[in-house]
Length: 263
Image (cartoon, rainbow, N blue to C red; front, side):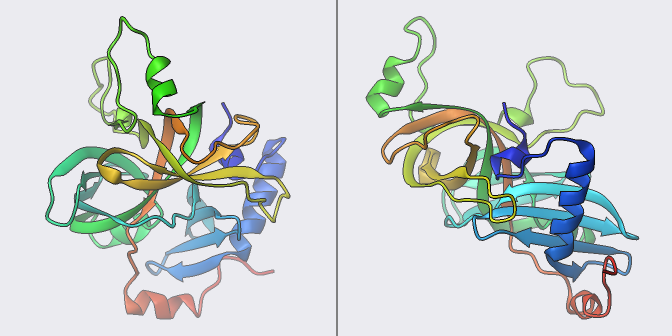
């Protein structure tokens, strides 16, 4: 299983190289001020690879590798931060619709949400995922045939928010993780190259339960050849997303006067 960074074409050979790449990319990103002491820095590559960093007093306290999502936003409600990194929310099957499932997600704009109180009653989420373990099937028929006849059968568009529950008894201080098991049909395929590293990765669009679409990044070390349209992919995924939240005007103005570092 590749790392989340490798899923978007940022492979590293050691801690020093990792640190140099992160600082370089964050420095080249777009900054916006959240509070007087906290700023957010976002680097987005033409390939869609993205890093989001939260900086406090010039120290990185939060770093999120993710994929810039381009899918239609999914209506959500009861958005709330459950720890320094993760948000819980309910996915809906339409505006004012029924809940599809509760899910844990790491948000690109979590710093803005935290500064505004850590909760949002309703919103819309552009959902994306980084593949941790993925299997490709030619079509729905092949996918069904791959399942054990003696076990339960899963639909070709199932979605299980595995990070929201535990098979073992959850400890009092344990919080949800932004992980899900899902299957869905591949409707778009590309293998872009991360222009910073020169490394390719697979980028696919998947349609899953309730016709929810999400962009998925897959490391080429995990899947040598990209899936094709009409294939069914299934596996374990790390969920990220953006609510499209913006900081207050005063914070935006202050970002023009501040820099995280000096060249």
